[in-house]
Image 1 (cartoon, rainbow, N blue to C red):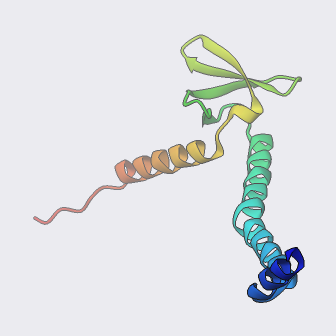
Image 2: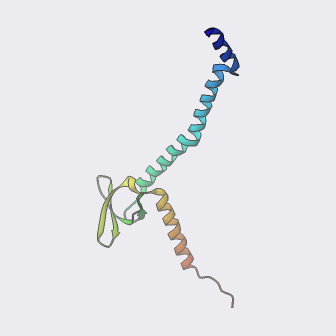
Image 3: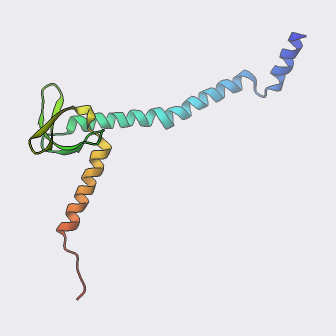
Length: 122
């Protein structure tokens, strides 16, 4: 009786084992292109960004601290000035690429909008 039940269940599945392996492979491909690959790309960009920052730049850390890089230490850390004569030692990896880019874009837009006079109708 058990053999007959297994035969009936296997016949009820369209495609059998080959179809389920194909679906599993398809799910892995979708996960790779939508999750794994973009995350690896973001990590690579973040590493490149953190290696390219220099002293004197305004940055924002991932925890939201704004400051100017005062010095780059030999051990890979940064000395960040967050207020006049107030320094904090942080890791390079703590600098947020997204927040810093948004801050620079906003600061750049603010300086260009105040530098160019707005024509008025007389």
